[in-house]
Length: 597
Image (cartoon, rainbow, N blue to C red; front, top):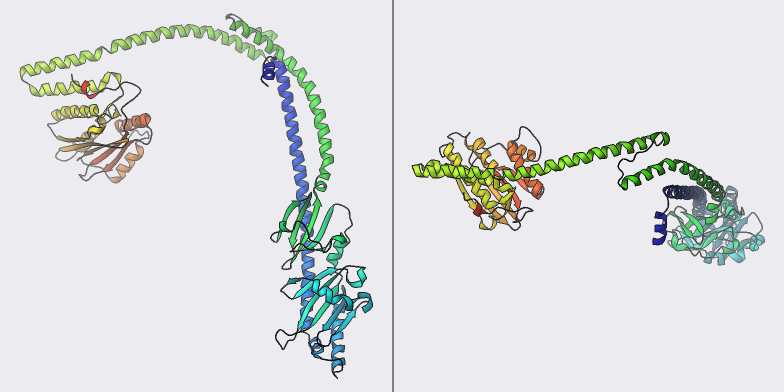
């Protein structure tokens, strides 16, 4: 495999393109063929299933209708007074026997006239061991006397535990298959006293249609009991046998595949029967085979033709590209003055040639620019080194003022200058953006000293900082903008112009929670909610310093950390700053011992 890939890598581009395009055409052809085949087969299968389902629905409705009529007829007969009177006779010698028997026969004749598909009807009397018979053929033709008792015992109950239905060729000496309906006749005046048996025999059109189906199309229909026994099938030898797929028939309807055939089944209403239609799987695909063969031949011819056409086109297209590759090889060898002849490239590749020549000109210009920018970068680095010296001049000047004030006995100026020096030293922090919490709090203390001297000590302060979190790293100038907000927007605008700020810092596992409270004029809850919502959004009406603090925390530690404002019990505003506890950053960290001037 590796050797084969190496050989492909050695091919020229035109050969690779030929193979790629040809492969793409073959793949697309196979995909089209596969999609067409699947679509055709699926469509034929759906149509066949729909046809079989329609056939099942029709036969199920017709068969259920026939059975319901047979049952209704049976109930009407067993409750008929003439039949009940006949069955109450205990002997043929009874004076009333002949009259009752004739009346019952008349009822049977009426029933036969109402149902043209009825072959015969018989009423058996258990008390007299006698029966009445009325049929379209003679008694000897149907063999009623010899068959009914055995056939009744072999028929299973198909509904309500009373009616029994069988389909066999036991009557008429095996010459034809008929449907037999048996219904026990009970005494209407005595509970559970069975006096006789009603026997009816029909030529059912639904079952006859199944028996006469000799179309040879591969489609078959059968009537099967829910226990799997075949009631009616075009294969007469299979009637009475049990199907091997009976476990597949679950519910009122469905479909399944079994031994190369697709089966569709439909339950016959409330009766213990299924109408089952099936078709061979190959019969489903047969109409699609011819179409697939024709499509395969056409696609194969198109692939062969496309191969030769593509080969010729790529060969012509590749010539200007080959010239471009040669010029690029010259450039790679160091000849930056190499150019393409635009006129000889042809209309399609003139833009490529023009672009190549322009690119080479730009490269020469960019090389000069890179040289100039490199010189400028070196100059910037030099200026940066010089700028590091300037803060020392500021510190030294402030220190001189401090000592001069001390010499003159002016402690206030000395304190102010000392606090200012510490303030700016922490602000600069030798270029560091992250400092320790202890150093940040020291910065706030110096800031409060300066502000109190400016505003006649109107600001009180209290600090409660756990030793366990003093070395936690925080973005520089995190607390100063928040304290400034408390002073200018809370304490100074308050009536009496005096107030206090309370700063508390505690460590909770891997988190540092800093709480800054003031006793200023406070804010409404709607103002607090608006402030919390605007912390991470740009809004010119919202304080830049606060938003800057929150944004720097989010950029450094993620959006799980930052500021959150709420009202406090003093009537002022409380801001909570949540930070991760960490003592290391990518750059060096200033420690608290560096604050001394």
